[in-house]
Image (cartoon, rainbow over all chains, first blue to last red; front, top):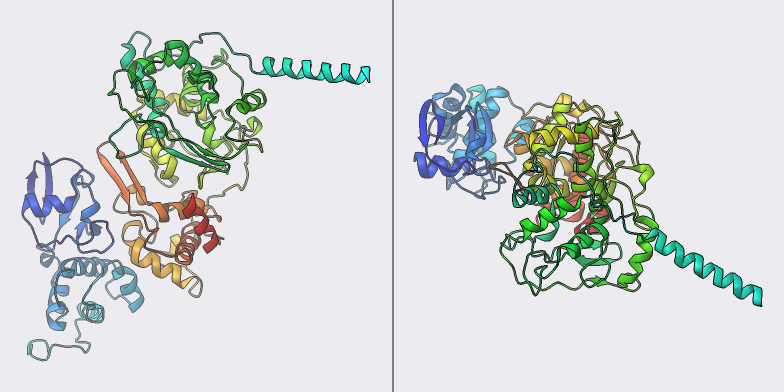
Length: 164
Length: 434
């Protein structure tokens, strides 16, 4: 039995120690917002935070988590960066199919927590490990800048009056 | 003419005499020092299991993921051909089920199998010759409790003259001495245990000691490092710059037990196997003994010595999330590859975040301009189980071309080692073949 601190709540899980954290989160704890993509820590879809650090939960054995606080896409909105990122994501309408987006948002929130005003280079370096098959990269970069500055930066959603 | 014949005859007699003198067998049973995990009064099978692990028999005698432990068939690609390990399960037909105690002891300590033919020294009888008879027979007793696997030997793929097993008699005359472990009374019992664990059982020297042109160990260069099967087995002498002299005892213990020592090393390749199959199972007292012995290995520089840069410019200038300090014009391709495929686990400051094993900063791999182990890790990835945790890195050999792997390896060496890597696409192509 392991105890995990997920989004501020203690969750018990009776799982083998080598089970990847992603399996525990999705199949045992029931938080299915975090996605399974490649399964080999290469696509970024499964990104969650451990004490604010983005990690690939598909390749992280649950026994390696220890007492570090886990934040998933379900809980990221409760952090200041997460709120900003989510609002900017809506304003720019980043999402297309959406499958990679929980990972993208987790990576972006972690970036902003460390680098509040990232350059294009910072964004590339931090987000390169998160793959989007729909090619939303331009909108992702735009939304990260908007989340950082609070200023609309072009690429706004025309139908969304609130953001214009 | 007569005198000439006498000289020839004399030379033959001397030659034959030398052959037999140099090939003489040490008939002493031998005595092992105290090994904490295999006390003399324990059940022989339990002792044998521990000793077989300490000798890492499984690594060479088991093809991974076949579910056939000790059934042999592992390929060893050597400069002169490929040889395959043998079946050492107790199967009567294809294994060692019909071997007597004496035959087994002779094979392990003298390199001569049941039918009297020589084994090749890929099987480290050159080290195991130091084992006590009691320890060898404990290993046999353990092997005979395991399921028998019927699996015939894979024939070796060796050209002439290397396929002539009798010729190994001459190799033995030149490079092998049948000799039991000799305790050093001037050293502590712990040191003697360590010497036996490293020399007789763990056969560290077989990978870490350079070899001469005849493939014999260069004893004057003991443990100064060697490359084999495409991987560098590093210098593990007490040399403070090129060896492990500067590592703390705690770091050495941590490395031997987990394959990872912060700021020093993260095992993969053959050493990863040695930790995963063998070293992690040693009792802490035995690990401590190994370290006590390791400390006394005379310092040597070795060939192509590696100097670890403890604080390369780029590592210092980088954060976990963002790169810094790289020459912006240099190796853009390598940086882009690292950014996309590597940074999220290894981090730009080399700290490693998925697992501490992903920490690159301070390791000899990234400080080796030749990039042998960095290239191998990129091509083959890492998969080993330490305790209850899988240490995993995907293999990128199929994902990237030779020039891409070379660019990535050179970037890693530049960024984390502060050195200019010299890996070429041709090097990568060669390593793929190993």
